Image 1 (cartoon, rainbow, N blue to C red):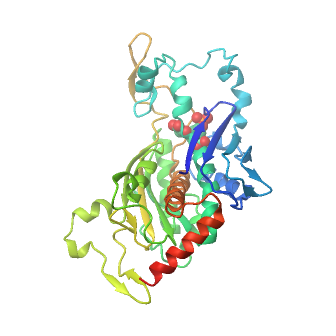
Image 2: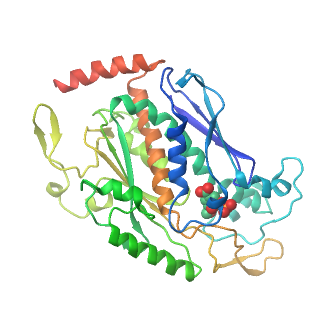
Image 3: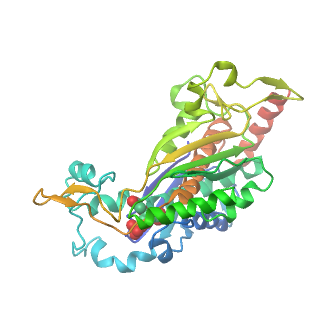
Length: 381
Ligand code: EPS
């Protein structure tokens, strides 16, 4: 079973991710991982950290001569900021400076401190930080390369930033080219301009903002996941994985919450047959009964505003319990464009996992052999 494990603090030496369960023989390009890491760093509204970092992956194990060996793949992403934090964060040499005493409402600070008995909330925020998402992006960007020969494609864009929504059509020929060129990852140039003005205003007010991101996965064969077991349902596993991304507060698939507002005939997608089964519409977002149905998988996630406010909220100082303003740590005003890349790669990891669960094999040739047998059968169904 494909799985991963991350380690690393935001101002520590590096982030590390170990991915286990990749079959052997998968062609791996480090450039493709770096491409995703670069995408994650971009976006209008990011803070000062991204001008320090230039994230790139170093593969430490599990790949030889550009192909996976079947053994765990360890990837390191260096934190360039480490040189500014070495004395504060050193494993044996920390001077304990830059303590955080006033927990930020909405962050892991207070509850994490209570749970692990840290009175210096830096010990919590260092790991709770969304910097960890760089490691997750590296994991997704690695494993999705296993799906390239099967024609599975992952796309993402930002649908909303605060009050500004992009309502343009994702099926428009140029939509994703425009997304790739947009500082806010919108497909609509005019809405993108309004979103940037909105971010400017939010910044001037000492505020932060969230938004909605959408991921579309094309080319997934029908039958990944399960209707039989709750813990193998594809939608359930996608929701779990995406919900675990820092700052995500909601996940919906297809029509999502909207499906509760209209009658059944306006929700369920009629079935048609033209040399194979398909659906007239895709309100289910490509998943029925916990299984991919062959239509594109469409998933949206809602990101809350980042908890660090330059105009901070009221909190309580941990030392004397006095009323205080929350600690201000360097942060982003808006990280929704980065979030779309994170959710895309987290989704890619889950889809690859479900794919390798179904077409299980120790080497990619075995996976391909079973995939061919299966798709041949369902194409004639
Ligand atoms: C992030 C790195 C962090 C933050 C942000 C995401 O760097 P630093 O704390 O040094 O500024 O910019 O994390 C948060 C806003 C948060 O609350 O965790 C990154 O690499 O994406």
